[in-house]
Length: 152
Ligand SMILES: *[C@@H]1O[C@H](CO)[C@@H](O)[C@H](O)[C@H]1NC(C)=O
Image 1 (tube, helix red, strand yellow):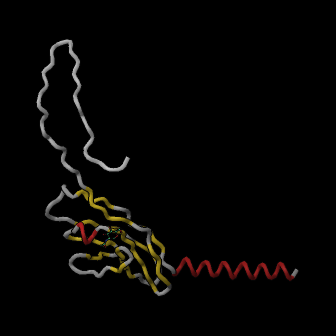
Image 2: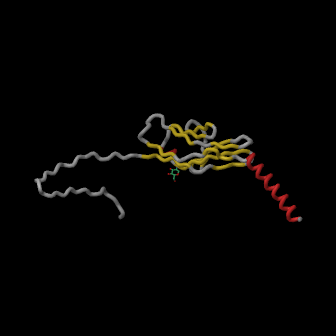
Image 3: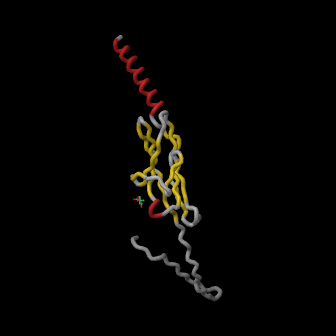
């Protein structure tokens, strides 16, 4: 009998704690995804936006980290809601791993990691080969060696 009573009290206590959690701690509704920025496509207005959105009952504030270092918003990085906009992309400064942090008075949640990488397309060499003339019926060997490499 007493065991049943204890269980009942415990159950309602746990239920109550769960309600408090749902009401007050932040929960992500949108998390950033990784971005591969093709360097050659846009020359002038280079910018990307990482999205981040969370819900919580006391108001939230957002921060972002790049490679685990907190970002200071300014002209380069700007926040709109939870979203992080990076203007005038710079391959050396901006490549890395981004994370969104959403904080209210009950705690901070940290989003998954999203990376920003810059992609390059090397141009193929368009050098012409010199032509080879062969008599009809004769075989010919055209050499095609791999470019210089190391290992293997
Ligand atoms: C972040 O870390 C990556 C991987 O170590 C590195 O390539 C990149 O340059 C770093 N970015 C910054 C801004 O330090």
